[in-house]
Image 1 (cartoon, helix red, strand yellow):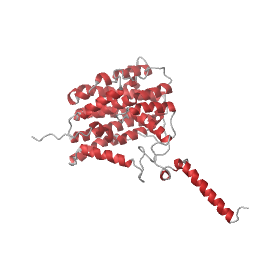
Image 2 (cartoon, helix red, strand yellow; image 1 turned 135 degrees about the vertical axis):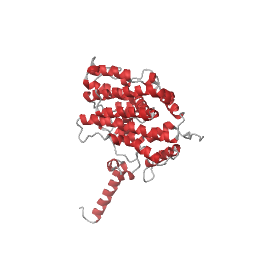
Image 3 (cartoon, helix red, strand yellow; image 1 turned 90 degrees about the horizontal axis):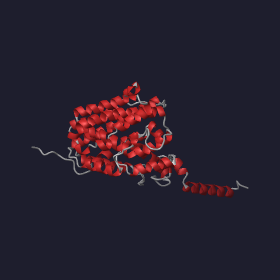
Image 4 (cartoon, one colour; image 1 turned 90 degrees about the vertical axis):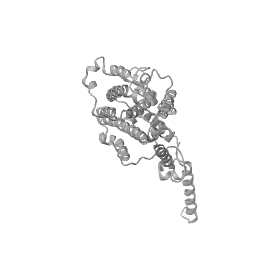
Length: 371
């Protein structure tokens, strides 16, 4: 029999991280996420977010209980990761003791329902892909949870501790970094065919996009000008495109393709004039968020492993602080091609302006214009 082709020992966890990098960046730019980072949180919208999370995790964890033990048992950690009970506590805190009887709590929003439907569909057609949803949800919430809980506590004027914020509290995980290392190692030890890796990465992007639709829905409800919820087919297209490629026989070795992708990403980060510097050397100057929020972000991003929703927020915070302090940019005068305002603040600009004014003054004196 034909021997099963395995992915080379290029890290599968790295393939997931690299393959979803663009989705990670897109998630950072959703209005709701940006406002959350700044500590601008509407209580009603937060309650809607929480209700959506409750329905999402109820569905995900029921599916994981059914399929994970047979399809990816080494990556099933219900005791450490399960969020259902924590979310029930939060629902009671925000919606009251009889929350389960309230229509708004029992009924998922359209975007959340689409998210749930996709996970249930995946459970039917290819249960291995539930791993992509577990990866995007759990590692993201674990990476950025502490940061977001601090921001939410301050913005919503909550008492110290996790009252109303149990979702962010992982009681059975003493060290988020050590647990993520363990999870990443388990990902890398999976024996997968090349096409399976492609589908898993594609489905992780689907999970990202479906989660972004939930945020976009909150933006629409919050009255954000120009906000819209992308069509669900756009979110599902990541997987559809991957399947079309596989049907056409475009089955390059995934370990090779991801290493190329990773290299391309690194190349794109370079300055077109040959200078290197950070993830975006010509990114526009962005004003920093509060020092306290930025410090919170540093803690989360320092340990960050998965490019996901909660870590998206902390990652965006750190990048904003970095660009505002001048990190990750190319030198003068090339910065003028991409960020003239930043270039105008450089001392070299003032020096050159001074030289030009002196030259103009001397020419004017020589011509007798100035008496």
